[in-house]
Amino acid sequence: MTGTPIIHIDLDAVDKRLNGGELWIKGWGEWTAGDQPTCLHGAIRSCQPIPGDAYIIQEVASRFGFGIDANDDANDWPSIRAKVVPDITNDMLADTFGSQWEQIVALVRRAAVLTDDEVQQLAAAWAAAGAAAGAAGAAAWDAAGAAAGAAAGAAAGDAAGDAAWVAAGDAAWVAARDAAWVAARAAARDAARDAAWVAAVALVVRDLVGEHPFNQEHYDLLTGPWRTVIGPVHPDDEAVPS
Image (cartoon, rainbow, N blue to C red; front, side, top):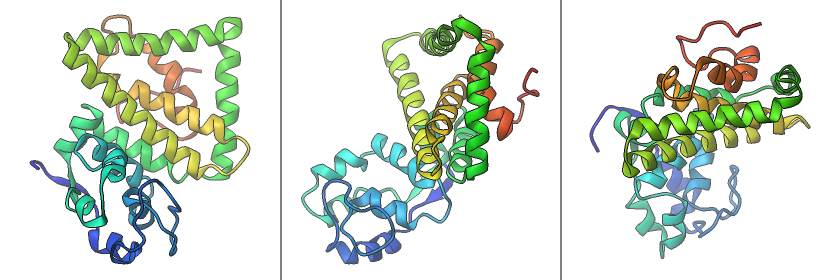
């Protein structure tokens, strides 16, 4: 693969977690550290030193031939191990998450280390954003999400490009959502997950703000709860409108 390595998968550590393949299985199994059977990505979750990277790897892997489906189609550990690309490069990340890949990586990593206090604050910010939108709040959120999707499709200009945008959005929000879900142990975890999810959706198409139907108001609505509590999702973000 071309590009500069950004995330490394330590296959020796993965081998050790799987006891040389004896603990490898199809399906998830137990993905926490220990000696329970698990799949490739369960082992990767146990071994990655930076919180959140396992979720990024999982989405990249799905695009580059060693994702969950590939694990479940494999007949043994050596066959799926051989497919793993140990160095995830900037080019692979861009192919998976789009032009905002650096910010998506940062968002997922931050979502993976949310504290219980931050989760509670995100829940409050999420509720406040809905209340501020008024009676048409749900419609406003739906419109913002639809505008983001429409902008991506219009910018892509063709079916293949549209599919690439959709794939990037799906990968980004799945990674962010899952990282936040696992990090958040409090009752407010749904709100934390949703705040990370919609922020990722908006971030993928941030460079399209002002084009087609997607505007700054849509972007601010989708990223507002996260930016209010955690901070900007992009270094060029302005302060959240009061």
